[in-house]
Every structure is written in structure tokens, then in C-alpha cells.
Image (tube, rainbow, N blue to C red; front, side, top):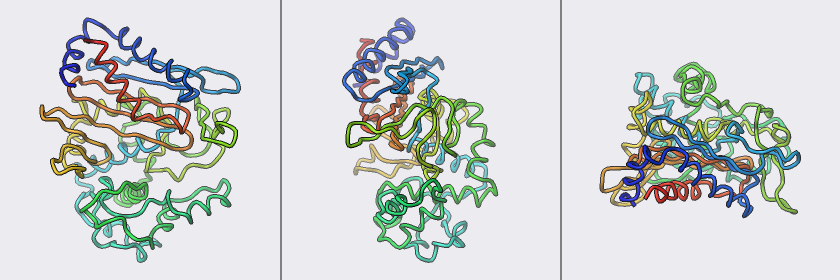
Length: 367
């Protein structure tokens, strides 16, 4: 694997971005032709910062308008990497202690006294998914409430309240169990600790001005250049957005991945976390102490990112997203020093698998 990647790293300057773009284009053209999604967009950030974009298919199947490099999609859970980054930056600035109990910030919430294991949960356990708080998205009461709530949406306290009484998924700090509720709680901690709303924090950090320049918070239903999302329906795919407008209020995703973005922005984020930019120190913290999936500690979930380490000392950072009829995936590979992100407007599209296939294809094309 890494022999091929090393060859690719050496070949970047000679092959240029045209070869990479051609490789991407052929793969995504084939995927759209095979029905993986109505439209797919991919961006690669090269070691010198150059962006290679490739697109295929339709952003709007009614008007048959094509996907462009500026077409936007919902990030889904890739946005968790942003929330974790905010938490780490605040911790580095002395405004948060990642190992402090969350009771320091959340003990006055209306659901607090019903939350299991509440006194054992620290802030760090939320972004690394070891707190054991169940995922509200899998709660039957949340699902039933959504059927009758219409366009009112759910506030963060609402979503946590659905699972506060539920059995924990494990002992705090001693297991891994993915849960959107962890990030909703983390978002509340950030707000209490700073006196700023989560969206104000996004603006004030400069992240959306300097790195993710084409990204906006998922707040409301109308978004410029938003592709139509799709989920499985009785007669094929069913739209979740039409004419750049979501059919439902999806604000509840919030700090768990509530962003409207492009693959280029996601790739720039992961390049910044894994590379040498202003966010690199935070990225090092985010991948340093992982919640390991195996005894060797070679793979696991850090703070807002999946991490895979290799014997060579190299690593990959990644995250996927599945929300509202859109799929996303982003990764950074330290061997080649490239970042890649892919987004599509169909829930049925396996974005993480496709992202890894693309980076392998790019490496093979440089041999």
C-alpha cells in the first residue's frame, strides 16, 4: 500500500493535476452511470495546496442542472470534526478543560437529573464517543415525535431529553459507542463555557472565513446552490430538497454535523488538521489519544476523527456523514500529504468506501 503511495507522492510534480483529475472523473462518471447517486462531487487538495475538482451527474433531476464544483451538500457527521476542533481550540486557549466533568456546564439542564452516569462523564468522553449516552436518532420516541412536529424542529435540550432515561451504551470512558447525542451535549458545553452560541463560535474562530469559505451552518431550509437530496422511496428515490430548499427542518443536527458545504471545503479542513497549517496543532491533539478499536491501538476514534496508524508512523484521518438525503466523506493521508472529500445527493451512496477507492485509484495511476 505505502509503496504505491510513495510513488504517487514523487509523481505529483511530473504527472500534474490533470492526471489526477482524469482518474477522478472516470471513477465518478462510472459511479453515476451505475446509479450510485444522481450527482457526485469530489475535491482533492494536493501537498502544494492546489485543488483538483471533478463532478458528474445532476444536482437537480427535475431541471437536469449539473453538479458543479460550487454545488453544496449537507455535511452530515463530517461536521463533528468541526465541533471537536472548536473544543480543542478552546481547551488550548484555557477556556475549557477536556477532562473536567460535564456537570460543570450542564447540571442545570432540564434533563440532567434523569441522565444515567451523569457524574462520571467528562468533556473528553463526548467527542471521542465513550460517554455512553444513547443516540437520540435511534430513539423511537424521537422518531414518533418527528412525525407530528411539522416544521418546528427540535432544540438541543429536546433531543437529549429523548434519551436521558435510557440505559447507557457502556461505562463512561471505557468503551466506544457512536452517538449524535454526544455532540449535541458538547455543543451545549461550548456555548455555556464561552457565552456564545455555537454558530457564533463558528464565525468567531475564522474557520469559515479562512478554511471552509463556502460553508454555512445548517439553520433554516433555504441554501444557495444546495443540490436536491434523495432517500429511498416506494417508487425509487424520493427528494428531500427541491430548488435549493429542504423539505423539512433539519436544524437538530446542529453541533453533530449541521453544515452546508462543498467537498473542497471538507478537503481543506482535513488538510489543515493533518498538515502544517494553523489547525495542525489542534489536529495533532485530535488524533493523539484515540478511543482504540483494537488492542494494538492502531485504529480508533480520536476527537472528532477516525484515525488509522501504520507501522511506518504514517496515518490517515477520516470521517463520513449520512444525513438528510446526502452522503459525505473526507480523509487525509499523511504519506502522500493529500486530502480528499466526496459528496453526493443520495443516502444510498457509500461515500466513505468510495473515498478510499478514489485515493487508491489516484495512487495506482501514478505508478
